[in-house]
Image (cartoon, rainbow, N blue to C red; front, side):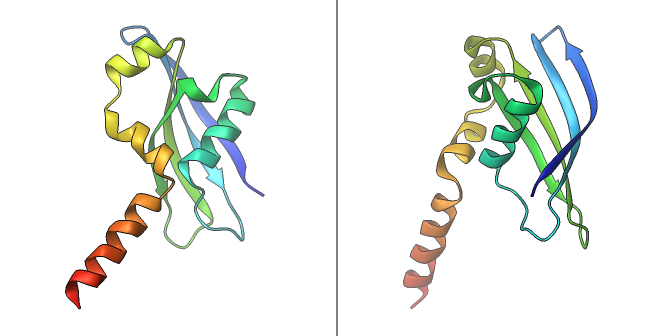
Amino acid sequence: MMEVIIKEKRKDPLFNRVVVEGIVVHAGEKTPERKQLLGVLSKELSHDANLIVVRKLLPKFGDPESSFVAHVYENEKDMKDYEPEHLFKRVKSDGKEKEATREEGQEEAR
């Protein structure tokens, strides 16, 4: 079971968002995907998952913990204006894009 510990929440009025930093404890499991973390954060923060962007998800070597930084927006317009497009693609692909690229690379190497 994944547990989220929020260490810091701070308002960023310039970009109209809240920056959330914390730790995900995932004992006995692999590092959670961004999509899984979004679901847990939306429940924890009582906010729409579509308005949360996971900026960083960094696993600690040898520990069942990962640190994260997420931005929580009030509206979609601000989120689209300030966040890079590749972060939205990471959540949609769920790693399938990387697997396909690896398979294509292996086939080309043969």
